[in-house]
Length: 95
Image (tube, rainbow, N blue to C red):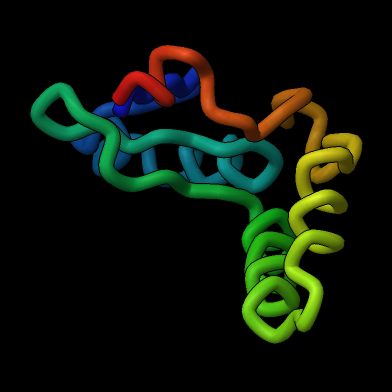
């Protein structure tokens, strides 16, 4: 899957500048890159909790379609840098 992160730092940079990276990740997603690949993303706690809540609702919902519809049609408001859509790009769908 193609990885698209506008904001990313190397693991070395995270280690050297942990306070700055922490501050950046407090209001936007920050990919952590190691060996040319982003396998970890730091996100604001509010965004993480929101995603956990939506996932929990999806798991416990009798009508999953309502939850999927709400997720895919929701306006991104978690933070100023949030993408307009979390849908997979054509490259990601192609795999």
